[in-house]
Length: 173
Image (cartoon, rainbow, N blue to C red):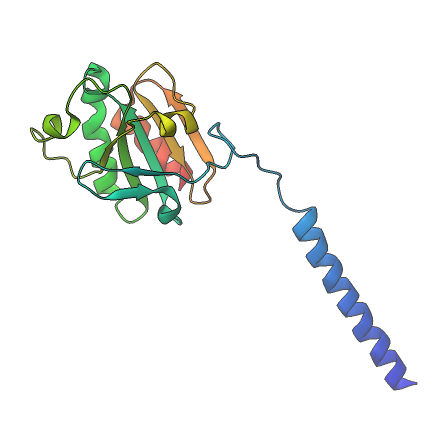
């Protein structure tokens, strides 16, 4: 009799644990769509940087990723580049920053950058595929912030001060 009660209790415990696992996996998760809008999961991408390296989003797991879409001919874009450099320095262990020059390119970006001492990676979106993935606006600059979980937390056009950018990044951390 005692053995039967023990078997029943163990069976109930196992059934309970299985029910919890099923609930968490099927009903407890948010249904996140893929895309570049705030609240969506950004698809992986890779882009060649001007220094010869590649930037791959999936390699930034566990970090907040800040993407700056800019152009050499865009005065507000050029003016805010130091803010992205400072964010990269101030949050170096927790944040990855990349500046992506939009297509079509009218300037030799690598030559333009040689006049500056930026340490953040720069890339040129030669075919526009990354800009398309990011729902890039025709209005530059544009900033996209991706949380550690790969979900977009910010995607808007317009210049940002360092303080605004710091608040956005801090919110994503």
